[in-house]
Every structure is written in structure tokens, then in C-alpha cells.
Image 1 (cartoon, rainbow, N blue to C red):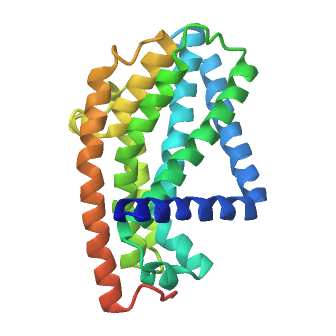
Image 2: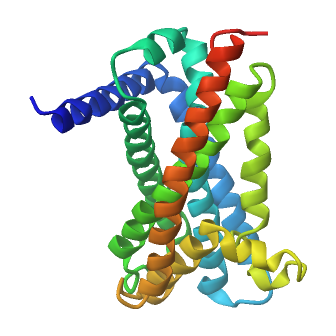
Image 3: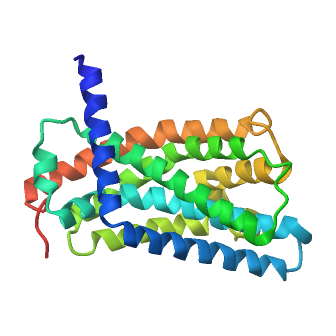
Length: 269
């Protein structure tokens, strides 16, 4: 077996392990899917009685924002809670001491997160379409999901950056990751266009990959835009992913070395 094939096999092993954990806690997965579905439906109902964008367009605008934020937040949390989850399972020392390159471990985590988030989003999207009796005949659903897959690279990178916080602080690090998630939500067009943000925050929103993801997916699902039409947005997402992934890996490596040197890898409290 070649070196590359061995690393790919190791990464797939972590994907299989995470799916096994998902089946173990299937009851909780159902709870969170129901919660996310209800939250998305609630946002859609707000759009039914809102002024501004009229008719189905207003409902779709808010629903797509809620749906995509659910996808991106699940993916982000899957990566940012990597260390916290290993501590919870009591496997962090075994995982980090295994003869597997760290990039294979993190690649497995990322691949699982993307697959899981896409499946969950497809389920919620189906329920939302039926609930609101939406006409999606013009929507480019496949194109929208392709955009999500591309955008996932950026959020995996951001998740790696956030996953360092539990390494730095075993007590409050996992909770601190929600600060980053909240900033991403604020500085994006999930529920409103970025033009309503204060002038000093709008440049930050333009650096946020969530903004371009939402713009591209809304174009695909609301207007039926092709991937060619949204290519400028997709290109920015590819650039963001190519930048954030190596930066996230580097920061995670630095954080891991710090945790090993200071004895914080396993400590709880």
C-alpha cells in the first residue's frame, strides 16, 4: 500500500468511526434534526407575514438563510468540537498517539462533517418545501449543493482554528467557539443583506465566506442560476478555502504542541 493510500485509508477510518458514534447517539441526532427543522420553519413563517420582498421570494430568502446557516453551523461545530468530543469519549490520548498523520485525522473529521451536514440539510430542505408548498421547479438544486460543498472547505478551515480553543482552555474552550460562530452569523447575509450592517462592519462581511455562499445558493435556488453564472462567487470560495485550510492546519498544529507541552491535552478541569 502506498503512503497516500495509507493516509486515505486512515482518514476513511475516522469517517467510519464518526458514523458509528452518530448511530450510537441516534436519539440525540433526531432531536437536533427536529429542532433545526422547527427553527427553519419558524423563520419561514416570519417571512410569510413580512413586508419588503413580496410573496414566495421573501419566504425563500429567509428559509435559504436559515437552512444554509444550519448547514454551515453543523459543519463548523463538527470541526471545532473535534478535541472536546475526543475528551468526552476518553479517546484523545489514543487518537493523538496513534501512528496516523494529523492531517489524515483532520481530513476524516472534515469529510464526515461535510457528508453529515449535506444529508441533514437535504432532509430539512425536503420538509421545508412540503410545508410551504414551494415551487422549486426553476431552482438549480444541484448547483446549490455544489456551492455548499465548495464553501465547506472554508468552514473546515475556520473550524480547525476554533478547535484550538479547547486545546488552550479545557474548561471553557469549547464554549468559546460559539463566539466565532456568532461573529460569522452577524457579519453575513443569513437573514438580511449586508448593506444594512454598519458601514465599518460591511468590509468584514465581504471577507466572510458565508456571505458568498448565501449569495451563490440564493441565486441558484431562487433564480435558477447556473454554476457558470455564480462562478465569480464560487471562485472566491475556492480562494477562501485554499487560504483557510492551510492556516487552520498550522494553527491546530501550534495549539496541539502547546497542549502537549503544558499537559492540557487530557486534563478535564
